[in-house]
Length: 230
Image (cartoon, rainbow, N blue to C red; front, side):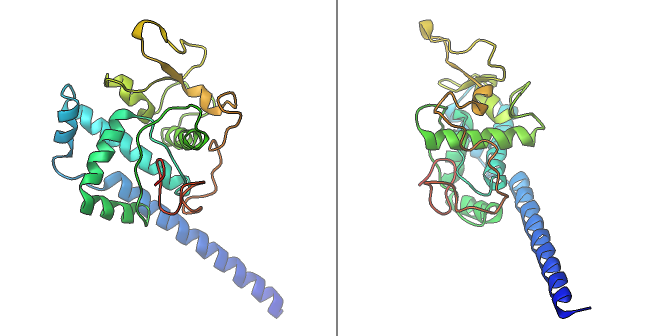
């Protein structure tokens, strides 16, 4: 074998080892997100805010919050926006347990993940990109087609399912009832809109995966942030 041929083989092996290492690290971080124990008393705080929630309801919210964290990880730690008022509240309470939250972030992302309030699709392009990204990975986590959903991923269904006051309501099918603006009825957001450029003229954040562990935290976001920026 020539030295050039051996060099090519060595490069190929090195590349394969890098891919294996990245995949192994991604799997370890995803497992940390799925299994990290939430601080004791966190659900009690959530029930103070929403007294009608049962313990089972709170556990469901916790499951949805983990899906949000997985979306941030699997997008390459890019900017993702929170689509649920109740999951956002649990996230906020988690952050108040500063030592535990910092430890979680280091295990899950290798850096701190910052918090901003929940949002819906609107005029802010950065938030829209973050929501589209969150929608894409939340759907993928539950084996839902993000372009043609037949049901909602848990994270986008939580507020309506748990009857959260002021929560965000989504439906999967745009042909169903859309905005109910009249007489105090709740506004309904359409899951299919995430694949449409009709909201803000683009679809940034939708199916833009660059591989987990990549990126710098998301456009306009700065290193280490997610879910809304610094």
